[in-house]
Image (tube, rainbow, N blue to C red):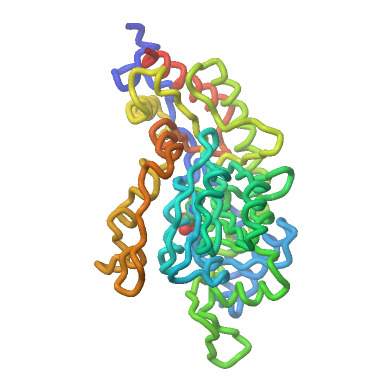
Length: 417
Ligand SMILES: *Cc1c(COP(=O)(O)O)cnc(C)c1O
């Protein structure tokens, strides 16, 4: 066989000869002198806490301004942001929270920590976001909140979701952990529902190592209550008083210093990710049996990752073997965003929650709850089996895109039936 076209897993030359930029290190993250200057300011100030410093509030104000929201509360992670939102909404035992079956576990953990029941909703097969028709079926009179996830930085069908939730008075939490600056019908995600939650974990559009932000326009008092929900329910102007049960999820001044510098670069990161993704979609358009995120007028995705749907009838192997071959070519490719829908993880399936108590599913204190299974989310099952998900990066050049494209052409033509 021609060594140029032999697959790298068969000993051929890899299509991507040098390592691609990655979020794991400085090849794929722009963290430099701007961050250092602000970090120095914090260190010299002597205060690393939001209580006495100014950097956390500076980051919050910049983030709020970007989203044209009056207030924003910085927290310690994206998971913490979602938990803070659920505490704000008084989610508790006996409540149900609807959430898509494909997401990061960080969307689901806060629901269970409130001893509420996550009700998994199926996804649209083309873009993996929540399916409004299935949401309508899964809403009950116990639904306390609906969480949508703008997965991969692709916006959910917010109008349809709000049309279901608004008449029933159910608040909508937007999980924007992968979707900074994503737009739905020209509006930034996180500003459309009731509360928007963001993550600044190392892999997200901007990073503070770990960190998160909650924004909301719910009511004029929200800024105060939202802050209490991430600060032990403690109104700081009062001497050691605690108004309700709430975690302590503070962001530090050091993280916020990095956040302020990162946020100033965010638009550049997002634009570079989008134009690289559009270039790759163009390069791959001649390959039958794969399709990228749908290009439609109402969606302006920002490509946290680059997913492809795979028509499994066209290839002789599944996505696990395809991603292994692509990895050998030098791509960071995975078979699906997660290996299976969330309800198949032991946390849900085997109720591994609070030790052996089984709460909130089978709890001494509460009526038992039915655990969901594959029949409930047929699209989510298909999407997990029939997707390839590529790591994405704002430092990908035209040359990288051509190399990634040639890896796909090589691997997919080899395994075509
Ligand atoms: C990353 C992520 C989270 C959790 O954020 P952390 O900062 O890692 O806690 C939640 N939801 C989605 C969709 C994510 O991608």
